[in-house]
Image (tube, protein in one colour):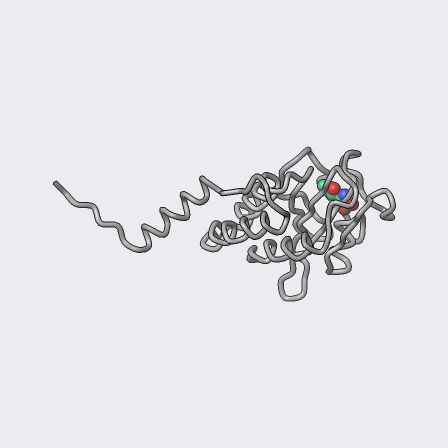
Length: 176
Ligand code: SME
């Protein structure tokens, strides 16, 4: 009988493939515990994959599934606009202008924007009337914003510094 011997690389590829199929998401636990659980899994899933869109798609999916937010997705900078990228949730606005809405403001100001109540954010773009609070993280390469990560909740005041910290950390897994 022919014996099969797998190389170290092949074993690693097998483990990563299994992780992609079986992302482990704690059903209960604090927000910090959930982020702490999914971060290393997302790191393993994305670190050997060079395709930006594929990695954005898996990150959006994992965040939606793990944290249950209403809408999770990316907008990429294309010319002078943000263009909708991989997301999970209801259909959304396709293009956003520089400086407009929460996403355009995060792009312009190159900083994470936390909006506890979208009704009192001047210029908020209501892709869905159900969205009540929002956090947007800009993704930079050499000082330029390449994309933003946008997470929306259908409750007010859903995001805090914990989300900002972990979403920035998760977003930094993406290489441009
Ligand atoms: N509310 C965002 C627009 C994007 S959607 O929420 C998916 C904004 O004001 O930029």
